[in-house]
Length: 282
Image (cartoon, rainbow, N blue to C red; front, side):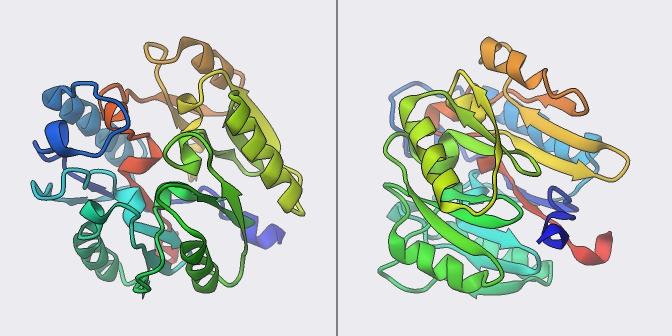
């Protein structure tokens, strides 16, 4: 199992997608906050710039599609592990066509594509937490048991456990990986309950880093050549108390990334990129 962990957090490529103007009025959301589309685009440009320039990933940028208001949230359209890409069947019907551009991009990267075609299955990538050892799949408003079963079939090398998501849109709305064996988790009761279930289901003991704000627990961990441990996380302007917790990670390059506009349509940091490790690039 240690061999499986060796490459955890190594990425060479990121797929991102532009923000359509329709995001402001038509994207799915759980609150009615008004989105500043110019601000959202500035935030997203800064996010993509971090991936491309600061972290030197090969960025594949797909164009925005006005008929798909949520299309910037590329994480939901596919799950990639190793050389296999599972193209999902998102829980919201309005998002199903997002997979078309995503499938094309994944094929161009020469990944083995598995399409989720079962009409009884739903799966959003935001409900999939890969720890380097196993998958946890949130059963939420967007992801069902059949979707989790198809994921398990696509990635047979790994155990797959399901976790009920009682609050928030996705499993990763309140947790993410902060490093090998480290789960970043929000402090709310539903988040802590979900973590307890994950710990009970796993044969492995994970460390946890608890942050006061559930939304701040969604961050992006990478382990990159010449850069070591890198964490993209919320800004102090958004979540001052949670940011202080990240500062305890001493051997990390910490990169605060603003997400003040996209959060209004339930977008988090992990949602806006699909990270891939192409073995031939190492």
